[in-house]
Figure (cartoon, rainbow, N blue to C red):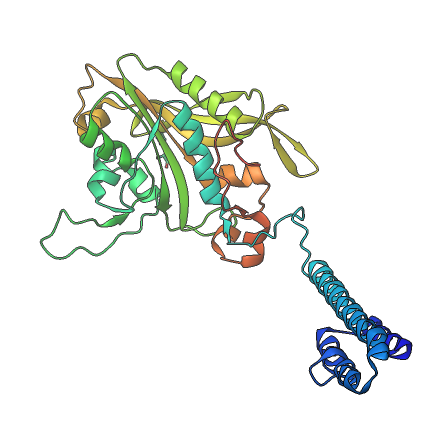
Length: 357
Ligand code: PHE
């Protein structure tokens, strides 16, 4: 009996898995197993022998069964440990972010400018890119014979015969949206208008399609001083500096009187420009007090209302802010360029949250 016990307890200790354990159970303590066979031999024994052998066999059977149960539990624990080890997951690892494209610098800068002017109380207006020559020129005090029409290198579109009110020009600036917004909303007014504009021009600093932001503020007592303050607030916020000086140079636009071209303070170091410091100047926009004829064309009485307007190139201030050297790259759709200069698609620029982090 001791031999049996040694044999089976040894086998159980070495069993590799539950299937092996089951085999041992069947051959040892199964209905036709070795212990059962021994039990049958009890019948041939004398009562005295049986009294010793019977309990001993039962004890052996119990011992083997409990060894089987213990080993089974141990194997289960080991299997669980192995699973826990192999399925272990480090939840403290940083997430894997998947790129879902980037925001084009022009879109980013448009959002930034819109956010800043939004804080200053300017709403965002839109107008069509294909407009009539009335909105693009006449209403802005640029009559047919005016040299500005020729200077603007306008793309004209074919008009169906007899349809002399159909849109016929790709707008050369965002200023027609001044008229459309005056017509639609009247005074007082505070809007900006970002959008694409077109001129037949192509070299390192000109593309036939580019982007402008128009600004327009109309009220009872608006002056050039308001314009200067608004622009300086805007440029400081946009270039993320504390203050920025502007320089107003007398200029001429048919739709403003007086008119000024505005420069911002900058410095040059090794061929790169830094905005907001130094003694050099960069021209960034055209502006002035809205011409009375323009107010009139928009349906606003120039005896009651006055205002300022400005227009600046989005592409140009984007190049300045983000150190982008060539304007044409904006429109090449080169993915490598977009990945380099693009912005994270879920970061919405705000003044409090950060414009360009
Ligand atoms: N429309 C002008 C341009 O495209 C800019 C401008 C807008 C100037 C508003 C004065 C007032 O150059």
